Image 1 (cartoon, rainbow, N blue to C red):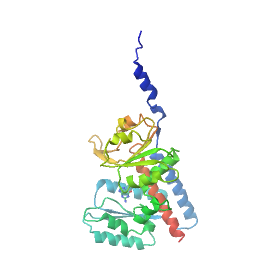
Image 2: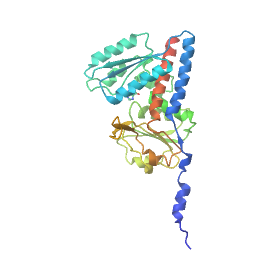
Image 3: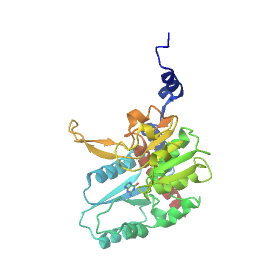
Image 4: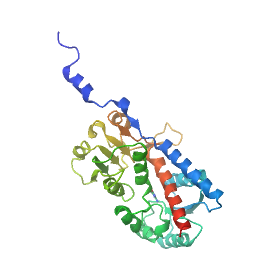
Length: 314
Ligand code: GUN
């Protein structure tokens, strides 16, 4: 009698990664741990009669998602005991007006660090704005001086999203040395810095990095070779199971609002990864929401704490 179960099916079962071993990289919990650590440091600062960190955020215009992100950043400041200032400017704000506001924040001794939420309206040159921020207050790590220092392994502000991903990999003890990391997307905020950081000497790092983008050919051929995939594309459910090898680590940076009329708010947040299918193959994966997003906010707080400490020691 031939076996009822075909031979090759049995083989597939043997080689397919056991999803029960999959480890969720829980950004919500980890970011709470980090915020508790920061809150304890703020408590110690207060006890010593020291000034607490003060973060300011500028938002230009009324983009719903940007307003939500900035609101979460301000709320997180309150949560850890920081001071915060939210500066809302209308969408018609001129470049000159924004540059003037930045100059004020640069000169304000009470402010330790500040961010200008991106994207900006089209009448404003983003590069000019980033260049105008005092590098010692650039807690986003976007100024060329800070970005250059990061690329040269010098101590500086690391952009919050890449910093959050490094922190997750570190806290969960994910091995990166000698691994092939494939980054999808070359944005200045995530993909480009991430590709630099994963290739640096150290942990997390020491990876062999491939940075892919809109002109990359046969991307699935590259992603199926990856031990670690970091996707920052903003295309919902882009990364499918057949693009991922068994046992890979998948980090999903996508946070796109997708219309969902069944929900009261009318949308749901969707990542770049087809989580349901991809998670069956991975060793580690970040969920959306609750993965990289909350880590970004926690690391912005960490950079602000660092900015305060540097000002105190000046
Ligand atoms: N827009 C999307 N992500 C970010 C970020 O990390 N910082 C700023 N300033 N704007 C963003």
